[in-house]
Amino acid sequence: MIYQKLSLKNIARIMNIYPPYLGAGVKVKLTDEEKMIFTVTMPLNIFNKNYVGVHFGGSLYSMVDPFFMLILMKRLGKDYIVWDKSAEIQFIRPGTGKVTATFEITDEVVNEIKEEVKLKKKVEPVLTVDIVDSDGKIIASVKKTLWVKKKSHHP
Image 1 (cartoon, rainbow, N blue to C red):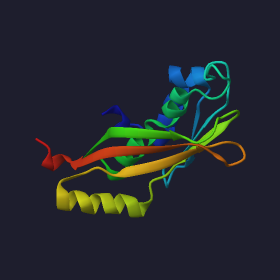
Image 2: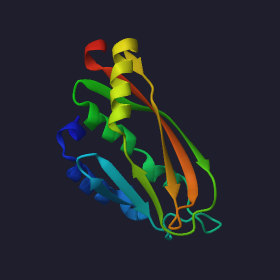
Image 3: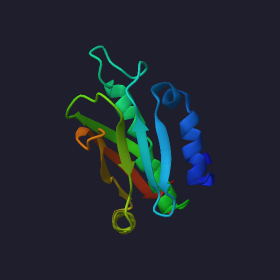
Image 4: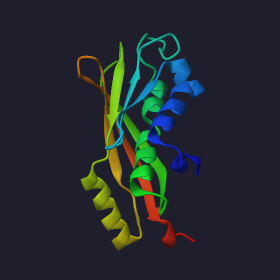
């Protein structure tokens, strides 16, 4: 997998020129390289505005889609397989300006996943991120279910 070989800084650079993100105005920033924390922002603009003038739900989901998987792939290393399994987004209030989501998977969560994989061979951790407006009010909450297995347990 190409993302395994890229640094997180380069992943952020690539994400910032990814055409759907460019069009929607999504900006990806690696805010803490050691802890692998990403901050993703998106202003309201003509390319991500829906019929009633607020953030299009598809753009809100798109801005948060890959990050937990990418971070967990990096945190676990090449001996693990990490896939997105499912997602759920709950829209709380209309987004009318710049929105932000911050992604972090703590050491504690990574260690729990590793221990569960040892016991169960595969796990499906659920990670949550909130998309907030400039006042810190939650616009949407996204639950991502990942699928994790050690390569030695995969045929």
